[in-house]
Length: 333
Ligand code: AHN
Ligand code: ZN
Image 1 (cartoon, helix red, strand yellow):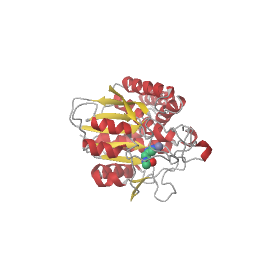
Image 2 (cartoon, helix red, strand yellow; image 1 turned 90 degrees about the vertical axis):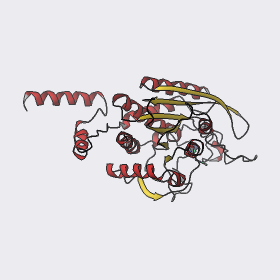
Image 3 (cartoon, helix red, strand yellow; image 1 turned 120 degrees about the vertical axis):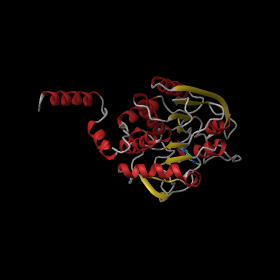
């Protein structure tokens, strides 16, 4: 080893010891080789970092609207987006739940490169379910940690925000954190089942976007993207209304070697925020959601149970989803 190489080696070792991920030299070179024609470098998504952002959310306690934990976590999320250099919008509003309860809700939006019309929107819900209504009856009224359901999508998006601050992609990105997604009519409810009781925050945002006439080329919704052995099938509504970006995402995943997570077959149709993003704003929105048409509820076994906690978060899943989304947005121009 000559002196110059030794110095490089030494610097790289230091960088890798300081942070769990750093920007890996090896991977950048690999990507370089594959992409010499287009010369697009995609930064390395750091799953350790995303995991830490999930843990921070869970540490506030269940983020159920009207609770202190919810209010404190909302402050944390807005300040994180500020810290990562986004232009932050807060939409605060009262929304009515299935049982008539008034929820003080807050959608939080972080915009990068806000002046360009070439935009991609990334979204997730940040609230957590007040009920473990898929758990044993004694737990139905207990709020869940929502490490996966709520925490994971937001954790991945905060890590992407951190990456964007370091290396901007060529298009504008909006990170939209919806509130009050998971306050839908519980399975035990005996009153009248009104329609559209899920996704209250995205319904509000659809009617009153954070900027007038907001538009994006397409949107990606992340929902339950941190579970063990997660599978992401083509979600039915996305497949009908956003098939182009959907193919782009699943092809990127395949190329990166994440074909075991991103299955190129149809799953079921799921009620989720993507429906309102499309219906109210005509933005094609792809729902990346852990949904298995062969399982009993369709969802991960921890879904809406007290087991939706940090123990059941898998960094390998976060890595697959985070890197895939990064590849898609850094290749847009
Ligand atoms: C229903 O349970 C009807 N839809 C799933 C939407 C959801 C809930 N995503 C996370 N939690
Ligand atoms: Zn849920």
